[in-house]
View 1 (cartoon, rainbow over the protein chains, first blue to last red):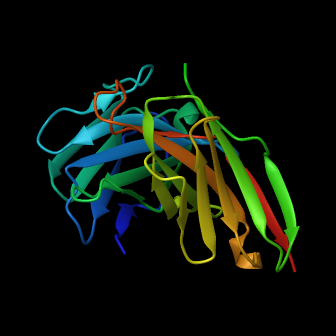
View 2: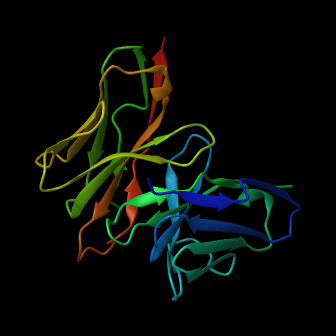
Length: 115
Length: 116
């Protein structure tokens, strides 16, 4: 089946630093990738839609200057949390949409802890 | 705004029983529905999907039923096993022409616990 990877799987950083999370589709091409965040015992909340070769589309209330998204190829999207603060601590999950089937496959998630 | 919701936040069953997880949706423009399973600390795993031109679809031990009249979706798991214990999310996607085309909207999630 389709596999999506994320790196790193977990990261701990100091307040004020920036953290980059990578999302890769390993065996299919994804024109569109999505970034979600999930708080404990809650559902997934869509942050932004990442389209290869163009600017990301952010959901209402998500700061585009704080959560930088780059989708430079059909298999890679990155999310950079800039000047991270403790309230940014969360589980960040990406998904990649198979261009042929429209099915979204999810990565394993990245646990971000900001001290 | 429109949302996808679940009737039951938790469900406990005995191993071998059949499980039914329900989901209500409110966006009439949605034409594609998916069930995901999420284990603790992991990303959602695709289970089964169904398009709005169908009312039933079967997979291995799982069946999804769609009732568009009452905007209701259910996931049936046959012979539930301890390994099925997880949080189950329904998700919906709007069809072409919708303002949210391509985006998935997730329900709240149901915690399924299977007792040996």
